[in-house]
Length: 122
Length: 322
Image: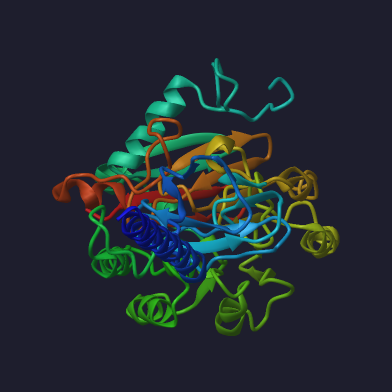
């Protein structure tokens, strides 16, 4: 009787352990998919009234930034070191760029060069 | 300002080259259009509605031409959903002038997004003008995405560098400059070393009595640097023109008429044929200004320039599209 009880307990424990492992594996698989598919949301920079807002963004390496033009006038985004350059964005059009390497990137609108912004990649 | 004997500015409180009377005149040009005659450096302006009262001598010269600017073909936002129609209205205005102008100067932003069909549409509409020759300089909207390659292919045949050139007509020396290329972060319009060197050589052999007309897209004077309305190295360019008796600078870009007199140089900016922009600092940004549809034509325009030999300056008529 005592023995049977022990057996049942170990069986229950065994199932519980298996369930925990499965849950953990499932969780890991999920986080794997997020990295591979770039599902992490992009950091948004809006262009409004000839201003990049926020003007300075600090992000982790591997983060994508999406610039969206909310003006009635076209703008673009050009890195001062020429590491990235968007096509011209008309009203409500966007441009995305993923920053792989840490560093400070200053950029501007080459059509309206008074418009400048900065991305700090950590 | 004491060294500028020919100035008509009497009270320049803000050191911006415009006194109250001058400002009110600017307002008049923006709203209704005016006929302006510079004689001996003194500005005389007449309302367009009173042009009939002017003598023939005042209205006619040996050379007259028209400046138009900022057609922004392809722009379709609420400030003006039909920029083709307003350009056509500008052409009608040109064709209605009492004297047929010798040619048209277009001071840039021919297109809105540098698309081939936008350039095509502007050219097609301008073919309807009485003056067949059109001289262009590029605006920043004409060199988007390809560093001005298409612009040069279309309009740069007889030009140097990024599209600058000069020509002579009826004794007046015209210089078309490009100040929308290789712009630097945080900077204003830029002419660049190569163009400045060319310009210095271009005017070197001219006699100082030759009237000079310089035209470029972005103003060659500091209208409002906070909005990028100026050119970083314009002082150097104007320096080459100091010895000349009559220098007129025609610009676009700011979509409104303004005038400034500084010594021997008269600066003008032209209205847009497409949409108005706010007065400097009067809005959060220089974006298109939305005005009621019935007012749109009163803030768009055409400029007619008359040259009278023997006078030290040019007569300028700004007319709205009304």
